Image (cartoon, rainbow, N blue to C red; front, side, top):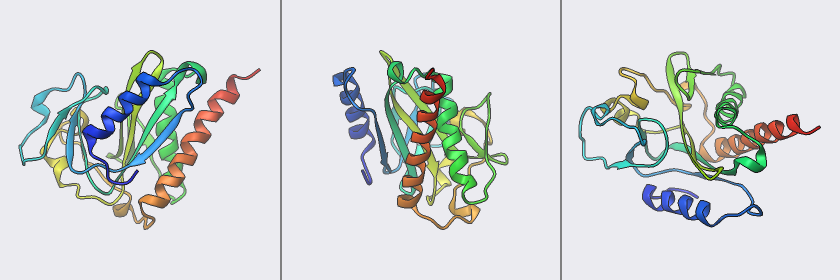
Length: 202
């Protein structure tokens, strides 16, 4: 979907979710946003440390504050969790594992953390996630730092954690760009979701 305004995309996700039914196909949207901070439902304003003129949008996903900008790969998952027979924790683990597998393709070791959802390379966070569940349908998703200006992360406590370092694929020696990484990430997301379904099938 290219570079998409956050508010427009957020409204499109809400509209899609409001009008979908049991026959509606699930979708994964791949895109980037212009520079914007987004604050989760329970987000605390003190996690914005400095105002540098970047818009702060109070959104309806879970989690605290994060930054989106050009060069960040975002995958929004619009899924029927009842049809997939997926719980929220299973979905979160599937999203994290898709990114972990993606990075493993480039010999980069990454991991998730039970106490702090997302994906980490060492102590630095490379992917943040947040979801909204409405009537067993989910939207929002996961953001992977690829080749972006990381400076605005220093203006916040990323995801509510003071001093949390962030990294990106470019700084880890990965030369593939957004298009290639987006295609691979979408494939891994589908693999993990389909595996959950097959594991539950008698």
